[in-house]
Length: 214
Image (cartoon, rainbow, N blue to C red; front, side, top):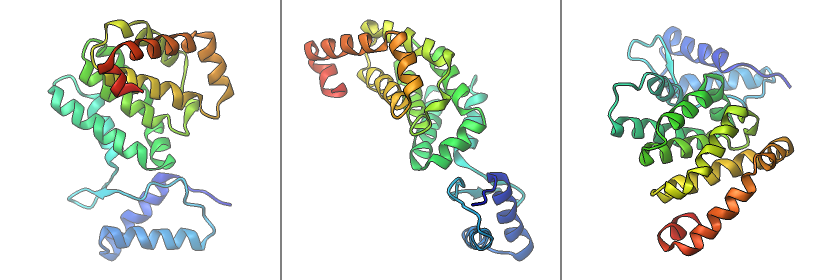
């Protein structure tokens, strides 16, 4: 079965809006019918999108948010948290969203935020949450840098006060391992299981963390 890129689909949607004056949703539906009639599998295509005010550009919220996060230096914590939440919500939707976000450097952007905010529990928890969503059924994105970051965070768990950091770090680890033998072996070699056991023991002895993590 034939497939197309997100960019190709977006171009046709844009043409339907500009050339035929179709509302955006109708333009998406027409593009979908056109490609499906040609035997194209659209399972890899993100269908929820916006269009710029001048009708010149298709906008994907996940990419818009990631691009903003790439240039985040002057953002308030609230703005950064809001953008990370959008990435999380979008990546939860479909594998197509996660693949699109990965293609446009989502993994490296989120990993960079995590590395920069190891002492900011709120941003750290939100970035780990977004990264765990990006990794859902998309575990190939894990690389050596990601494993190193994971190990560093697990080693610092005893000093982390926000239980959501521990919960989301564990979620990220889980998503990386599901149906992926190579990642499982890599994480075992990095002694991640031992850290998880240590966390569980700490959770049992800490009611505040226990209620959030287990």
